[in-house]
Length: 460
Image (tube, rainbow, N blue to C red; front, top):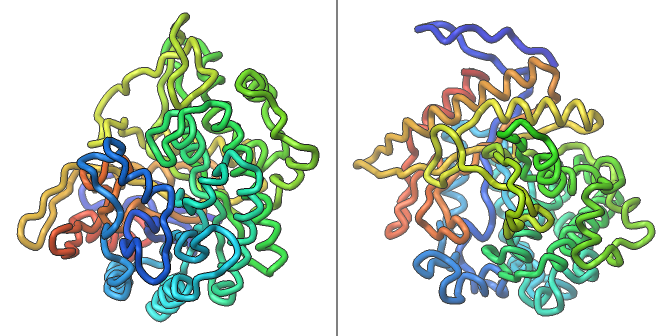
């Protein structure tokens, strides 16, 4: 892959141009946009249950309707085509396809994704399927959820079912989205579904998610899948007080806990010491790491911000980071998004270069990058200059990473549509397309029009 030299940003001067074949697209997730939560045989997921319990989600919001994408998908695909997207990453809702998580396949639910894929291909858009974006069937949670080993096997069965229907038209298959979030926000801090607060269960869930990835990757490969991916939320950990031991602890919990088993076939020793203190290592069975360490073609990178830490003797562990005693999670310096997350494009360059250096065997795809800001529609326009600046800065960082040797093959903005932002409900808007939730009207924001131009010129 070759790149052109980045020039200065003077008026009228060209900006970075990306390599030929660089993939431009957008990403969404099933529970966040589909709605139709009880239609055509779909059963409840853990997010249906969690969002309906008082106090879990802002203002009691749920994904029951969301963006009504289930009924409006054809219009949404036409919108993608108008924006010039070459790729669309979407997730399949497990409880829509297999309502009890195992056994019976719901033909109507699977048929929705069949139609969606055909619609995308008819508009020249390549589908990128994510099999798990956090909506575990509630029946499987009732049987132990990801803390139970059997869930990994059921996930592989489900992966085979979806591939059996879509595999003739879908080339790239992502097993999991952000297993750290599923395990540690779902089973440890409890701020995500299923809302459990059990550090030992969180470490078991993390391992079983990885095991499910390995089993599913093996099943997909056996069925002829062309490209297999794993998507992780990754964050450079920066220690602000000049030390490094606290940053290493957090890097182990957040990044290496998933990178090393999947890409090296082993857990970091410093992480195993922490896991052993929280319920032991009995859930890691002989042969598991061989299963987890399946060859993959792409590592999906979800990047939003760095993590800042410092030493703080006596500080208790942060709720999502069991084993982080003595670590202070510092407030971010500089500007932040509406989520309070630091805006730090340089962190993306640092991360991508590190990944290609430490794990050179796998190509990289930015599967999520974006920001929430307080957007407001003015007639048929949404002026989101902050988001345009955010995306511009991060794409320049991505280009710089390529120039420094990172094997980055594409960029999928998060997100195509404003949507249900998990525990924040509908209060945080990440989309490049504005959703009026009362009318379901779609309004491309200035960022969408800017992104369309980026795609047309393959650069900035």
